[in-house]
Length: 358
Image (tube, rainbow, N blue to C red):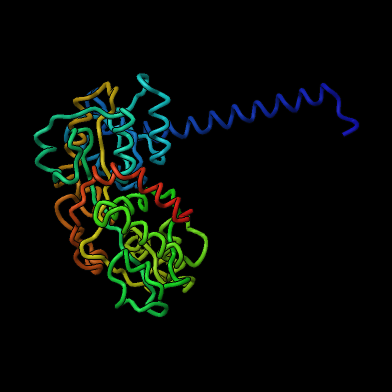
């Protein structure tokens, strides 16, 4: 602009800096409000536990409240996407305020352990309450809930009687009829790792090649988008976590999504790939005893059911009793351990890239 002076530019730059500072302050304040609004109950002691959680469910807070009421230990909560929490912990190092870390998916919790962000915990309660296949051999993390990776199919587009397993999505008859979430999804990475353990690398390569050649359109950013696409006949079959369909059917996302979910069939492979949400005590926890106590509470039959029931996940040792989930039918977990899913994560990503899974 011809009429703009150096002084004008300085004024504009100053205003921009002020806006950025205000924006930064706003987000900081928002985080603090989430943390401190969970100081419950009012008559509790000064003991507390700071939780960094990748579980984004408001219903979890009810479980934290019950824990606080029973133990007198305050729960301070910071929520963010799993990858963001891991990066934050790496940046904070020894200065981290985290006591307990909760993450979803085998890839994320095992990567947190590999990054030396957790510490081993000896707990008889955890050993008893968490099945051996769902906990770290090194005692750094323990599962809290279970999620089944299922198939969703539109019977008006595909023959559901011919789709029984993940490997069936490679059948040439499904050309242009398969919908998949993108490669960044840890849920899909763990599914591929699962296939490597179950079938071997060569068989997994062949499966990926056939399945990717059947994909009908660009890869989706989330599981709910896949259910919608299958319902709208944009494709005939996709892979999602079971609770996404259940939440849609329950009307959590609104009436339209409930109608979409009613148009698809949920097909559960037998045996099925089962993933988890899990927790571990932070390496530099300043409230270790309190963190262990909360982790034990969450992994207990009462705690696991408490966080799993309202989110339509499965507790550690039983199935979700909600009629919507019950209608999906029984499932039998395969023999692959969560640790194996983490061990083969890098190899899974490499194979996905090679197959063209974007």
